[in-house]
Image 1: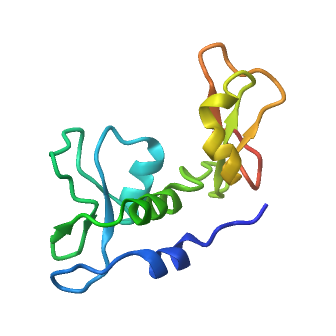
Image 2 (image 1 turned 90 degrees about the vertical axis):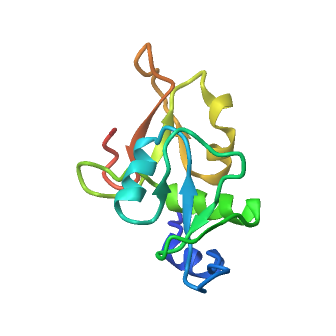
Length: 140
């Protein structure tokens, strides 16, 4: 499976601040998933909480300037920032979604992007998915 070098991609598509010209960081509203928490801890994402304003910013620069831009550009950078997260607790490798049989419809986009795989065995009764390490295959 081909790994996507999200750092290189971010350098190409992340827009510059219209006020000061420095590189922007994507802003995300809502209850964060573990993948977003991990990306935020590494400074690759800014979490703003659950209350989203009417015209939410999509980007923020290190000087605190905020702006909205192209929705597809923001969404693409966000996908790259979150891809493979959270990292494996055993080896630190990138992870995929492990989709339990019967829940495939919920993850069609992730399956199409190669960020998910369907499990052979049914999962726990209460779960539709888990995370699986691409390297050591540990379920996290």
